[in-house]
Amino acid sequence: MIVELTALHWIYVTFIVLIIGFMVMRRDTSIVCIVGIFLIAITATGSLSHSISSIFNSFSYAITELLSTILVISIIVAMSNTLTVTGINDVMISPFRKLIRNPTLAYWTIGILMMIISWFFWPSPAVALLGAVLLPVAIRAGLPALGVAMAMNLFGHGIALSGDFVIQAAPKLTSDAAGIPIQDVINASIPLVFIMGLVTTVTAFYFLRRDMKRGVLTTTTSVSADSPSSSTDHPALLSLTQKRFFAILVPLLFAADVAAMSILDLAGGDATALIGGTSILILLLITLTSHKNKGLEKTTQYLIEGFQFGFKVFGPVIPIAAFFYLGDAGFGKIIGDFLPKASQGIVNDLGVALANIVPLSKEVGAITLTTVGAITGLDGSGFSGISLAGSVASLFAVAIGKGAATLTALGQIAAIWVGGGTLVPWALIPAAAICNVDPFELARRNLLPVVIGLVVTTIAAMFLI
Image: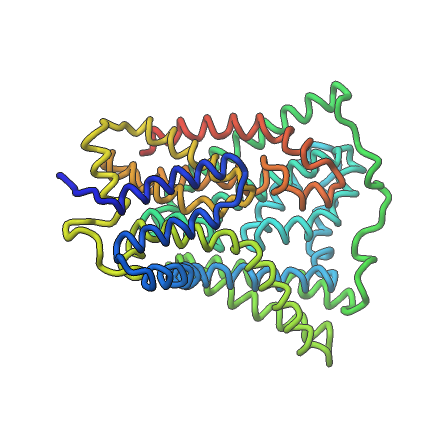
């Protein structure tokens, strides 16, 4: 099949290279994306006014596509704030303190709890929920604060965020960019996420134990093992009985959501809506119970805090997503019908052209997607570049003739493990701060396990394509 490549295709490719280059240099890509959108629009239409309007329309389109994702994350953060302020989170986690009797149990208990909580609350709120309560207990059990931070990073910002099976923010971005159903990306990511997670966490624990035996790492005095639980810092909003009631109710409601997703076969937007609606009900119930006559005002305050967090996280994502939506169906809706009649979209056209020129293999595709994903993660967001990973995955899948979902999932995993809070120092500040450790030292500790994990996961992907 012969495709016609126009100036639009070459401009798109040029700006993909520029975006990757700016990410490597750890510079912001928003202006690059905006210029790319403008140049593509003016080349297609020849109209200055239409091109300027296309910039706004591309942002509007991106926000519309991402709105449910931004909304559910904002609501979940708002709800998690109520759990923290009222001290319910302390009660929810308290039974697991009994499990933390030695460094090994501390590492794996905190890690697995962080993973589970992050699936529902996202890692940043989960760090706050877990860190203040279990850090003193872990240190008392002999696990250094750096080990606690590693566990929270690798299990939360690594395993949970790279798969994002419940909230589905990450697969939403990558599947849209790749032009495939979100469930395909989720299904393809399951084996890769757990291969990456198992290899990385076991490797990290091996190095951690080795250095503890050598005396290189010891329990730090930066956080006192005798420091009181963070529950003492909370105002007396609820009685202990009420806290226990909500500590049981909240996980039961989310467990019911998971059961409903399975029974009713809910996925994508439907699953997100169910989680979001449940979070709103929990937020209202806890806030009205705890703040009583101030509940109305406090509800709005928590929602505002949640929306501030949501748009702060996704602010850098919108311009880059707006650009990459032009590579697929978004082009016609944002700019109009200006591609060649036989075009299947810019990305698909490029993939077909690439297949005609270079005989690509699944091995080359897997290595390329891991590399592209890792590079896009260097900006420290993890999310701002995964649209690029999805777009490149689509391009290679067309060229190879298969493997779109696996390549997309691989790029997503690489981007989030590098940039979502395990390697880039400025991305893992929340976990480092709550554990009172140096974020650069934490990044150095995570580096070798994550690199080993990426190599093994990339090889595994080659067999799954």
